[in-house]
Image 1: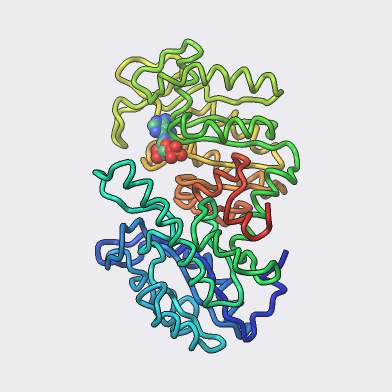
Image 2: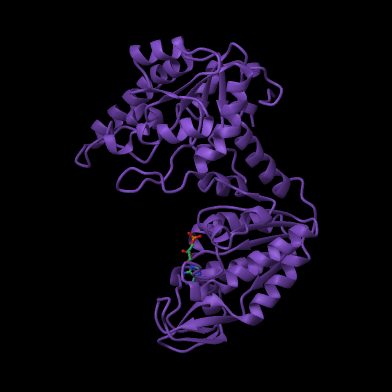
Length: 419
Ligand code: AMP
């Protein structure tokens, strides 16, 4: 497989798919530029080699061209971070864009307008809800056809394709996967970010040093079930916490008061407990909780067993006994995967459990464990505690990371390396 590190981009035009889908405030100011910064090493390497960078990304979920989701809003920040004046193309395809791409000199960069202004990027028709089944079927067929032309056009600007958009690697879109077919094996590669993400997940899931502990938090079992099932085949310890604690507690006959629960998942919870036993996995559930008399940071609080919660009270964080038990398992691990806070960490009065988990992960990492944190709120959580630099890897991918952990082959990865 071709690698960005060894490839010389001198005199080449590269199409780089990045994930610049950053949050903007109402004045279109970037509120968190992490995703842009994450792609900088790749872009700088290309420019430094004397290559030209044609940068493609999506922003938000536009239904067509709209100023709200224009990548023009982020152009100044991209220029600033790259240290060069980046050109802009008002449209990601079209004659003018083609001319701008062709005119790029070595060391120059061109940012294309939002790829998702075209339905062809995702290959999904944009129809009114009133569309009939036949209309929908015809539109689906039409967009798949026009997607080929769109993809070919994007590919035609460049000699080389680089995918550095891990955040969208689970999507088989024009610029994230299909475009790779237009480049031979020597001329397509992962960017540094993508490579690092893939390496980190594979280190955890395939090249695992034991004991391997996964910590799954968050609010619901239902959204994590595929993850949990795949992890049961891989881990030594599985810590299940957060809101799903109460579905397990109720399933085993506990009284959970007003805690969050999925009543239709009680059998599933018992099934997971049995599966863990069968597979010899040490399933670690919370035993005590920090209780609140309402879902609020200012609620009255108390501590108690997760199975004896009075009505009018709900568990919003793990209690001290659980903190200790979790920390003990985590500190003795050599590989750690953490997805999802163990309590309502957004409330300062209920973030202590997640903080204790973060501290234990940091301690294990110091002792040589490999720790990967990722998926939605876990990143916000580790950032809140200022500990992102003290763990081995913090993933930028939400859905993409979770699908990889579920054991799925991601289209964006397969398109480049074949599996
Ligand atoms: P998820 O998106 O499934 O990873 O869920 C993350 C959310 O779960 C966070 O916003 C937490 O506040 C929430 N959460 C964690 N523990 C609890 C709990 N005990 N009760 C309600 N929500 C929780």
